[in-house]
Length: 264
Length: 362
Image 1: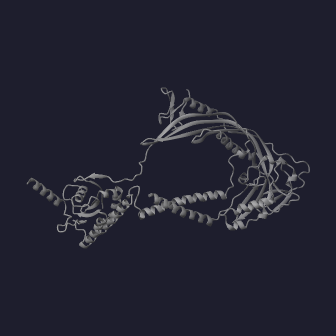
Image 2: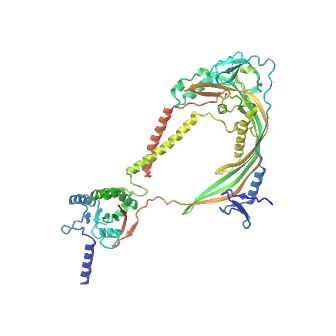
Image 3: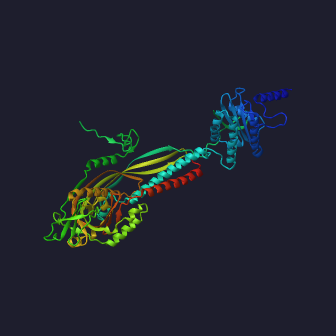
């Protein structure tokens, strides 16, 4: 009897934690959970279709969720970790939870998600999502989230996840690189022109008269080298640039999660 | 009241004191320690250091023999004021410096007879050929400048030089450093050791030429150096036949400074050259140069010269008539230089961009 009660209470708690992602009729696990009602049904269906494709193809769950405030005193991070852990998602994946009233977001990663979405990656994705979230365009934000996760997943599978030492090449980076490259090119070009100038204007006064030194006339009368003092400078080594990687923590279920949050 | 002696730390400039425990001079500001002996020696030396001094015997040139100047005429350029000497068979018509007509102004007078002359060893043809290849090799010169060069106008001219002999006594102190680097797990260390390096010695210089013509640019003449005095002979007017000569109008006194500066620089360089320890850096801290036994001679040196006008600017080319060394400034074609700079900027920019993309920088 005790066992039954405790089992029931666990079920009740779980029911309280979240609106079940598992729909009662067919056991299908939903990837779009719109508790705050920010998506219209056709958009939600379209996103669900897209998100599910990632799982079908790679066994990697991508979940996007809106909530209308936190149900208890857990943090958004704990809520996101638990929601992912207790709703039947695979061991590899990530979840984006948007706490709509507080305009807070958390991305929680698990398994291969931790590898693919580094701390840098989560920051980057957050920055990319902010504009749409600010515009209240959750459909666009979740679409973008999916595209980015897929991009990061593929990059990680290719051997090198996006990280501080392997950043995403977007338009801003391209422009920055182009600017810096042209500046370096210009500096070298200016140096080359100065060298050319020197070659075309070789007429100048001579500072020395070395050509007229009488050979063998040098008599060195005094010559010494005295050691004066030694000075030691110490600089801290810069950390080897292996990238920032992912920082992880353990959720209530005992599984390891990575993640990061942002506000919009 | 006695003077208080204050020593300054060569490392940070703070006042240093003698540390009795360590038996060393110690800087309380940066904790550097010094050997007192080295310090005292350095200090004494600074006190002894004499200011630069230059002594020259300036009796150069000689008087002409009777009748020697009879066959020499002087021509004056009305445009730049240049005075050219030619023998009676070599009538100058154009100023070699600016290309304007010159006029006969009379017989040679009021000029010392040169002591020596280095005869021309290179012919006009070789001068023309050198000039041609020199200008043609300048790809970034305006095409019109190349085509408009009047090769025929190249003239052989004896340029007056004052030659200075001297013995230089120099004392130079340097600050030298050696650098050693190592690291442990946390830090990189750079150890810089400082040395007081001192050299004192004497050396002789012979026949440093200083251009005695105000029309002839000094930088142009120094650029075609060196002249080998071994090729000089006692002056005879016969050497002037077929060539022009310039009268000196810069006196020996005014020319000394130029030679002094060069002897001073060379003395320091020669002493620096005796530092054989492979230091990482050597900086001249102070130097004192005394020049004595200076003796000046007056000589004519052979120079092929061509004056060209391009866009209202005068370009002078000169070839050392003894060694064949050729110099001259060539104008740059703005459009060609711009094309080069733009091409390099874009070309290098693309390469740098590809490298940055490959390495994932920024």
